[in-house]
Image (cartoon, rainbow, N blue to C red; front, side):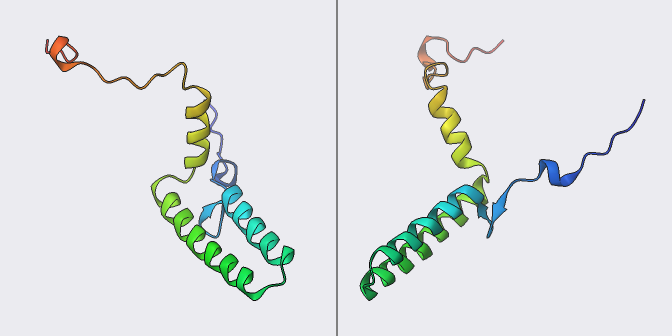
Length: 97
């Protein structure tokens, strides 16, 4: 049997600044658009606060699951197939054999 080497770059998660790449880039895009659309110093400070808070939340999210947004989108897509229903324990939901 032949052995094939799996390159780490092909299966590695795409990150940017330690967060999920697409969400981090989108956060930066929103903050830059806010700063450029208004030349007010207050909007610039609010944009900076938005970036710091958003980046902090993205880092926390990436510690739990690096692909959490993709998992959430899949969950929304297949919600009709996999309904979240708990088992009724009184009606034999968990049977011991």
